[in-house]
Image 1 (cartoon, each protein chain N blue to C red):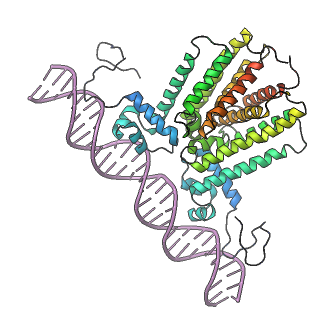
Image 2 (cartoon, each protein chain N blue to C red):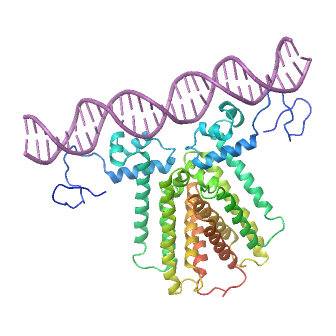
Image 3 (cartoon, each protein chain N blue to C red):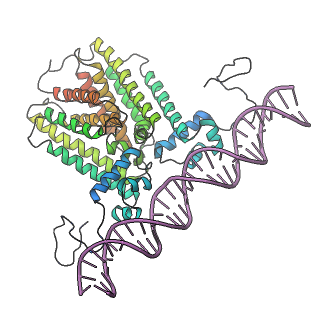
Length: 219
Length: 219
DNA sequence: TTGTTTTTGTACCGTCTCGCATAAATTAGG
DNA sequence: CCTAATTTATGCGAGACGGTACAAAAACAA
């Protein structure tokens, strides 16, 4: 995706002024709006007309910018992953204990999954990608990679916590990480069908207890 | 759904011989085939033509038997739930310890989720219903009810195990049940994207350890 | 001004969608 | 036999689907 420039390599930041008619949409904002449409209806259940309305773009512009419906969906998935990871990394800024991090982690997820209150959205990828995964290699690969990524990210954190004594010395960090991911998955699905924030916070707290109480002592 | 009979209430078992041309399909078998089609493509991603091919029925027969596409989908979901619950209850026949039951429970799930080997299917409801849930009240209600049902079923079992001393006396049975359900959810999604049986069995074993090792002792 | 480049807007294409109308086929009742 | 009841089979129709062709519009370059 490197952009060729005639002579001087300009900083790719603002795309500067290009030659023709200026575009009337902001690509990232449009992608977010498209994701909102897919978020509601899933890939197969969302029509191009709905995407046109959601993005405010017209159909040819949509194609020129993001390719066909399938490519557009993949780009919204990647954007979601990018944003999610960035948000998660911010939670580590002050190098918190595992228990604190996990609490923030699930709180942050809930904030996204239950945005909009009662017309709950759930997790974008977990809610929409599985239905598509069996007939769509790219989506399946994305989701597989995404889950493994979460596992190994959490496994690293848990392993460090284990070495600090916040988790039982004998614990299997990867196994605990998979339980932590499992907790995220169930929160994702439960949000989608309207579970309350309170209930899901309690669920997360119980999972954190279980993971971190496989900790130092405990009678 | 009570069937009116002229005078005598016949046993509804075999549907007996009815008046007109006999049907050439077995309703439950057709429902299973339809579920297979939805299982692959999701609700919105599966066309009536595909359902016709899958069931071997022709279109008007499909409508006469199950109603429109949406009703058909709901009926496949209910059938899946019915079958799953029956299968689960069988696991309790010899009144096994919690740890044994949970092992069987996840093994049974894996058997279904990974039927067909590498073109993995995952859990039918978890893989297809969430995508539909935001635009379909009936599907959302079904999935919500299904999850709560699993929670409370497992909570009952765990509570009994707790009273037998197989789980820590101080444990919250419902919270542990939700973790057990979470484990089922993550296995459901991971199967859908092709995780290996071996990996998922290990994950289940770790979760069982965590749940049951919130048990009697443990240093 | 006159070209060049890029995006926009409209309109359209062929295909597929779901659901149903209608008639033939096959059974039981009388 | 004839009639009633039920399922099968063919096929259609109105609309939605994804995707694109084409020309107008709006910027820059010269």
